[in-house]
Length: 422
Image (cartoon, rainbow, N blue to C red; front, side, top):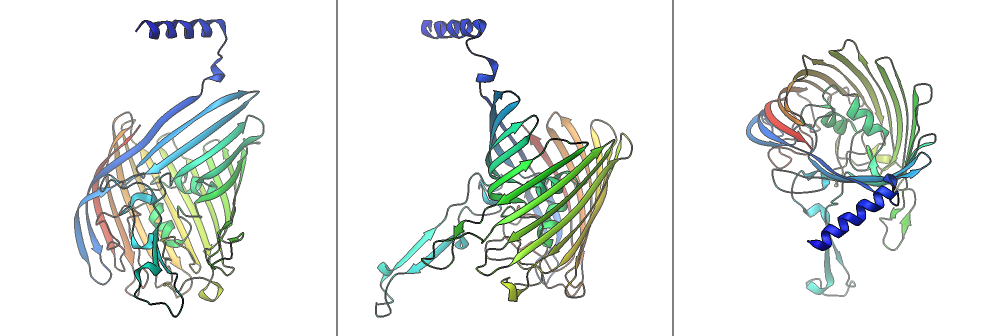
C-alpha cells in the first residue's frame, strides 16, 4: 500500500511539473451495442407461407463490441485505431455477422494429395482445413487525421458507401425491415468487399465550402484460386468514391463503386447511389435515395445461382442489373419518443421484374434512459408469384437460426425489443 501511495504521489508531481503532458496519455474506450427481442412473422420457407414466433437477435443495429483509442500528436495531428467485432446473443457466436455457427462446412476445404495410382481409400491422402471466422469482422484499422489535410485510414473497415446506407436510411439501416436486407438482396451491401473493404486505404477530406470528398481502394492481393499460382493482384480489388454536401438542414451524398468479384475471370460489379435527407422541421426529417447495380452475367464470370443469387460465401455478388429506391421520414414527438417509416423497392431489370420486391416498415422507439431504447416494428414485404430468387426481411441474424427465412413469398413481421448502446 505504501508503494502504491508513493507511485501516486510521484505521478502527481510529474503532472504538476508538466513532465507528462495530456497529449502523451493515450485515450482508450470500450464501446458496443447489444439488442434482442421477440418476433412473430409469416412467409418463411421457399414454397409455403409458414409462420414463426420466437427470439430474435440484433433487430436494429448489429450487436458489437469495440475498442478504440488514439493519441494527440501535436500540430493538429492525431492517430486513432479501432477494433470491432459482431456477436450474437442468441448463440454466443462472434464475428462473420454472427448469423449462425462458428465454423460451417463452407469454411472447410478437403484436398487429396495422392497420385492417380494411390489408393483412394487411404485416409492419409486426405487433408481437411477449416478457417475460423474473423473475430474483428467489422473494424480493424488505424487512421491518421490532420485538421487541414483530412484523414487517412489503413486496414479493414467501412467505406463511404456504408456511411451513406447507415446515415440516409430513415430506419437507420436496421437488420429487420431496414435498408440492409434490401441492399444486400440488390447487391450494394455486404460486409465482404462491398460496403466494407479489406486491405483498404481510405482518404476522407475535411469540409471544403460544405463539401466533403472520400476515396477508398481495396487492394486485390489475394491468393489465386489456381493451385501454385501465388497471388492474383486483381481479384477482389475495388474502388469507392463519394462526395457529400451539407448545408442548412440539407444533406446530399453521391457514391460510385466498382468491385472485382472473387472469380478468376474479369467480372466487375458497378454501384451508383444518390441519397438525400432534409430536416423539414425540428421534429421531421425526410429521406430519399436511389441506387443502381450493374453486375456481370454468368458468361462474364458470375454465378448462375438465380437472378439475385449468392455465391458459396454468402457474399451478395454477381447479380444482374437492379434499380432500388428508398424513402421515408422520422418524426421525433419529443426527446423520449420517435416514429419512423421506410419504403423500399427493388426492381429486377433483367427478367421483367419477376424477382422484384417492395417493402414497407413502420417503427416506434421509446428512450427509457440514456443509451437504452425500447422498440416496436411492423414490416411487410411483397413478392410476385413468379419469384425465383429468395429474399428475407431479416438480414444476417435470422430468428430461426438458418436460411429458412429466405423466402419466395410475401413476408410480414411484428417485433418488440430492447437495445442498449454503451
